[in-house]
Length: 199
Image (cartoon, rainbow, N blue to C red; front, side):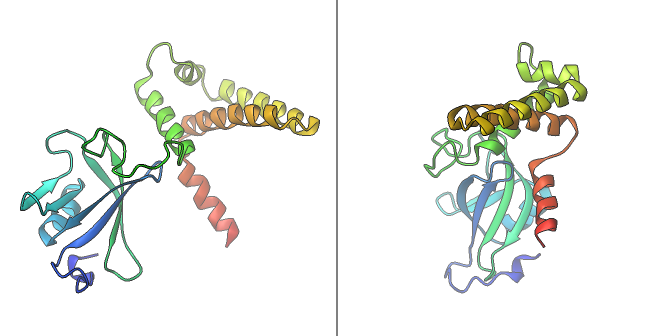
């Protein structure tokens, strides 16, 4: 993919609109614009760089705050006049200190947010964390917890207790995400497998 592949006649200023999405939670983080130089710098360095219309220069997101956007994937839209970048944010994206420049519900994509927190616990292993304790005990113990939570979910489903079923299913999903992380499996891996089956 090259900058020349995009059709920028509609924009008038030759700038490419870029939507940035959190690669883990799928939350839309921000909208920015790129010229050729910003596009090529982003591709070369793997950090999202825009052309700042207000500053009149290249602007790498996070250059002052440290909250860089690390590129995971870059995808043109169907008309080749907009770019979607899936990225991993190093911190809040918005200058207001919020995760996103858009005021969407915090619960949007929360399972992916939870998976990201679990991944962080696995990397940092903070003391006193229940998740850390599970990782220390290993996959066999985590798998046993998944089995227990699965059984409890089935019991509540059979008894017709919706409220308890939601509670137990939440425990099940959490422990399953911990087990997936311990096995090096991501939500994206499951999505790919399910998509293959759907085809």
